[in-house]
Amino acid sequence: MKLSERIKSLFRRRPLTEEELAARAKEIQEYDFVRLRRDLPQVGLAQGTVGTVLLVYGDGAAFEVEVVGPEGETLFLETLSADDLERVD
Image 1 (cartoon, rainbow, N blue to C red):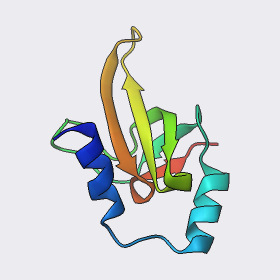
Image 2: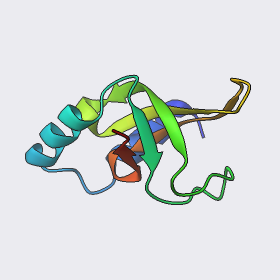
Image 3: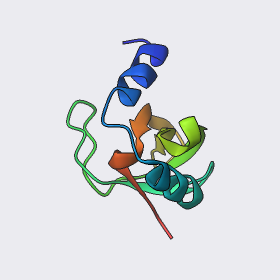
């Protein structure tokens, strides 16, 4: 699936309310560390895996997230919905 198709599919889910979008946009920003709230078995990542937000789409409706390995290699780079993530303080 192309990136543009993946992003469009994320926006087809139940849209977040204006209040949810505003809260999410304030909560997660570019370059924040985030934690997966669910398993992503298709790429071998478990709930709790930590990554970095590289881009924010649609005022916080979706995020481009990178997970790196111990030597700095990219293990995962994917667009995820706001529901998939929580910010790491």
